Amino acid sequence: MLGRMNSRQIRFFAVALLLALLGLAACGTGNTLVAQRANAFLGGTLSGFGGTDGGDPDARAVARDIASSRTYDFTPTGFDIVAGPASSTGAGGSLFTAGDGDIALSGDTATVTLDMLSNDPAVTDAQMVGTFSLAEATTAIASPGASFTVHWTLSFKLNSVDVSLTADQPLTGTDFVTV
Image (spheres, rainbow, N blue to C red):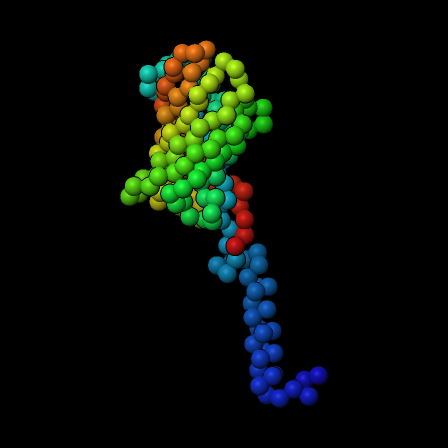
C-alpha cells in the first residue's frame, strides 16, 4: 500500500500514526493530554458546631443526618464553579434525600444555598447555606483527593421549633471523569 502512495500521502499517514501513538502513550501516565476532574464532591463529617443551637444534641444529630456523606454537585455545566444551579444527594439511609438551590459568587467566596427535602415529618423547612473559597474548591476539582472546607449554617424546624446552627464540613472531589 505504501508503494502506491505519493510523498504527501506518506507524510500525512506518518503524522496521523505519530499522533495516535502519542495519544496511546499518554493514557494512564498522568500526562496532561489526559486529565481527570471532579464531577461531584463528597461531604465529610460536620465539626465545630456553633450558633444558636450548636450545643443541642438533637439539633446536631439532625444536622449530621442532613449533611454527612452527602454528595454535592457545584459544577452542573462543566468543571468550573459558576453562579447558577447547585444540587446534592443524601447518603443511603439519610432522611434527607435531594437538595436543590444555587451558587452565588463574590470575589473568591462562593455561597451555596440548598433547600433540603426531608422524609422525616418531625423536620421541616430544612436549608443549608454555606460559604467556601472558590480557589480551594477549584484545586479540589483539578486534584483527586484534594479537599476544601464549607462553613455551613443549617436551619430547620424540629417538631415545629426553629433551629439554627453552624458547622464546618470538608468536601472532597469524587466521581472523577476523564477529560
